[in-house]
Length: 280
Ligand SMILES: Cc1ncc(C[n+]2csc(CCOP(=O)(O)OP(=O)(O)O)c2C)c(N)n1
Image 1 (tube, protein in one colour):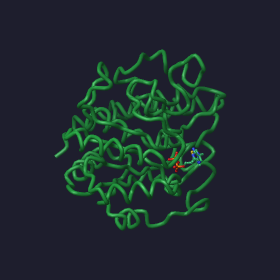
Image 2 (cartoon, protein in one colour):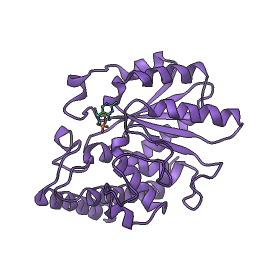
Image 3 (cartoon, protein in one colour):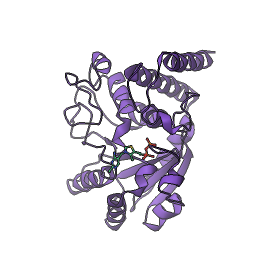
């Protein structure tokens, strides 16, 4: 049973993460608003509730791992890590600048980042390696990895999927951000990978589905996924690309789009409205 107060707390954190992403992108610069915002609830749940991590000791031997295989959505991960204190807020203001810590894709120089990702299809393989190493060392760490639906066309990912079930890996939980839009249009029109649930099941994974913007459901589904023994689990999250921003929802133009002044103000206005609703 998930506590109402916990859900409320995580909804507030989710909102803050969306504010951070919008402010990091700012006006007149390209940024991955769409695929970052579709992950805001998941990031809040994982980083602020589920995962064992400590920002004062980012490489603690007992930590859980989170790899963003769809590394282009790094802004949402940076927002979460910053809110947790992994690095100062000033870094958000100089994101994607040469003198800054935070680059366009996750990099190992950033506290809390576990792998260099962004070349799509690789995150699951790296996660599997970490999961196998932890198991070999008889460590209890859990490994989480987040993939996109456009990313499902990458061959390497399916090799890792087969290997994970072959090796009966159960300290690994994958997430699929099923937002149905990739970089330049609808995923089904660009490289259709239908029946994702049945595909993963046929590769030997236990498959769960959840609405991707419902905090309570995400928590309950992760608990079920982590209880599976002897095989890996995947949670397919039914999400909306650009969630929370009327101009960006379901819109490939905001995969890595540019906000002008009016759009930026609109984004903040919609977040402010959400804030009022949460505080009502
Ligand atoms: C191997 C590889 N090919 C192409 C790209 C360029 N690329 C960046 S994001 C993207 C679309 C990804 O779509 P999806 O996985 O659905 O991400 P989301 O919509 O959730 O942001 C592509 C093709 C890449 N990063 N890596």
